[in-house]
Length: 241
Image 1 (tube, helix red, strand yellow):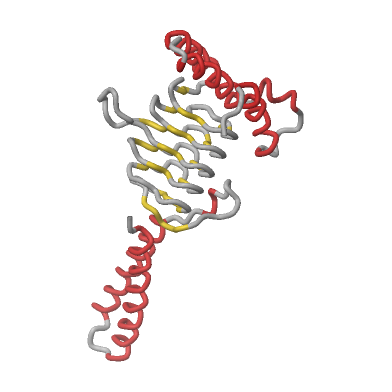
Image 2 (cartoon, rainbow, N blue to C red):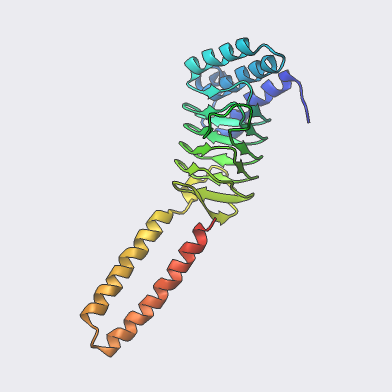
């Protein structure tokens, strides 16, 4: 649903009040929330850009970048109730599309992987998604509805709806996410799980070499080996595209 520029700006001002428990006074909005100001300036610049005042729009966002350390191209499409939390270092490219109710943390990049003009080069982020601090989402890919991208992940492939993706490159590890959109601490550490598996596997091999002539120990090793195979299968399943 299309709304007026004033109503959009009003919604942008309300997002920190709804999403940030650190906010204790509306007065703080004017000094401590660069993401809000970057979005408001973007709203104005976007209207100018679409009406043909491209140089003026770029100048507004250039000044905004200097003041807020947030780089948003005025041609990007940003929906309603988007919240840029802390926001320093956020980059949103020219053909990026951000739908409603999206949360971006500091250092997020919605970037391109080609220099070709006239095509969509940047990501689409569907409504309700959360992208963690420092994550890089690159290319003409889609982050589905209600997805969660782990901090510092590098996403170069589509992420299906209701999924969680982490890693470099990012892989989908679960379908679904915690009801708390800010629960980045509950994203599993798949690298830790893999290293734990490898260490246990080495221990089983060492024990097998030391006790290969003892049938009782061998039976125990076979049991451990079977358990490790189940763990490994679960790990492979969790990182499948």
